[in-house]
Amino acid sequence: MLDISTTDWRSEAQKLRIRSQALIDGQLVDAASGRTFASVSPIDGRHLADVACGGTEDVDRAVAAARRAFEDGRWSRQSPADRKRVLRRLADLVRANRTELALLETLDMGKPISDSLSIDVRAVANCFDWYGEAIDKIYDEIAPTAHGTVAMVTKEPLGVVAAVVPWNFPMLMAAWKVAPALATGNSVILKPAEQSSLSAIRLAELALEAGVPPGAFNVVTGNGPEVGKALGLHMDVDGLFFTGSTQVGKYFMEYSARSNLKRLGLELGGKSPNIILSSYRDTDHAARTSAQSAFFNQGEMCTCPSRLIVERSIHDQVVETLADTAKSYTPGDPLDPSTKMGALVDARHTERVLGFVDIARRDGATIALGGNQVRQDTGGSYVEPTIFDNVTSGMRVAQEEIFGPMLSVIPVDGEDEAIAVANDSCYGLASAVWTDDLSTAHKFSKNIRAGLVYVNCYDSDDMTTPFGGFKESGIGRDKSLHALDKYVELKTTWMNVAS
Ligand code: NAP
Ligand code: MG
Picture 1 (cartoon, rainbow, N blue to C red):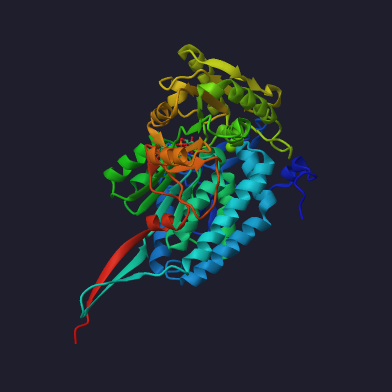
Picture 2: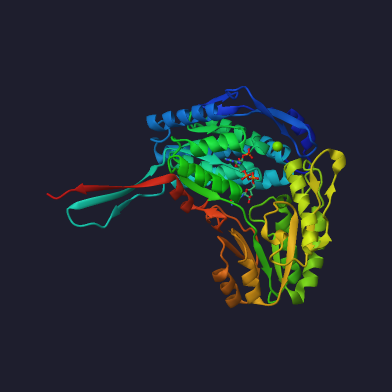
């Protein structure tokens, strides 16, 4: 059994054999054009690999392979029980290769190795297990129609589906789409984000080993405006399932409208309100948990509770505890198992995140903690946990998704103002309220426009619950049995059985 804390992760990293080609029709292949792009580690600026830079031709090849696999039934017509066995084997292979997969994730996008192992890789395996386990236990319907008729309502896979995912939880965001898509019998083309392609390629290779037939799960690496757009506009892609920014989500709507009206699932941005009320018995606990959730994964989280709305009477105590908790998130080496905050994904993103410090200042907020880039000597991209105080709801740091370790504290007077501020956003992904008053908890849960409401906790998580947002945070839900609906068409078959 591998011990996270005693493993020498640097020497494990040296031993890695990194795959950097696309995986199309069961084969690792270069881009048709021969082009590559450099995968650079945000840990220390090290060059990790030259990754195949796909384009329209590669997308066409992958879609054709996926279509062939779908039409000849090598996956789509396997029984649910057989698909279950393969997906569960894949889950086992993910667990068996957890060191390698966790290292790929950490090296490529900078998150702490202990998180990659205990959160990302574990959740990916669990996701494949869960949808594998579920798929042979779901029945179709016979509608209660008139005597002499039978109307069957059956679910059929969409066909060829694409998944386009971001870099913050690279493999997990992919698994949330690929697992239900494969479970329901679709063929899949995955496009990982350029900053984090490596684990996707390895995952698809493990899927082949598990028994997913060639063509049923392809990976085309490359950049969004080429590969992502080509998938979005493709006339033979039946559904496109996206996790990423709201802006790019809007592009996909446009691509769908301009092509074949392919079905879309959109998991987009967030600016989640987290409300601490004086009616909660333990202000310090609420503030500590809030800081941990805000700075987890370097704040690169769609559900990051980045707007802390607090009743003025407890404001000072909350800010003090937030700042104190933030100290344990001082950025460190992501390959050190004790590190809780790693590197931001790349230099460009780091620059954008740091830009919000000046924006906050100009708008009149105060910088209660942090605001600086650190560990520059490593050649990597690290930003201190940062707290903006005395923020008002109209300020840019209260409205825009920063996607870094930056938290805005907004003082309010009373519950109604808290709800109004919470809803003053184009986003509606996650939210939280801290209170010991049952009626207040219920009032907030009813009145906050968000797909997730946490009461006296944050980021509770389970495969059984749907995940996704209201408003510009997206359309549709990942996870849970509800997610399966995205990947199937309903077919009604009427039969006249009158005798
Ligand atoms: P992004 O810029 O929207 O990119 C996401 C994916 O879309 C990447 O694979 C990207 O490819 C591709 N893409 C970019 N431009 C494109 C275009 N013009 N046409 C087609 N595809 C395009 O998002 P990100 O910066 O990677 O990730 C951060 C965002 O994801 C945040 O907004 C965050 O809230 C959101 N997110 C949402 C959830 C959720 O479940 N709601 C979960 C996690 C993250 P390249 O990067 O390779 O160009
Ligand atoms: Mg990278």
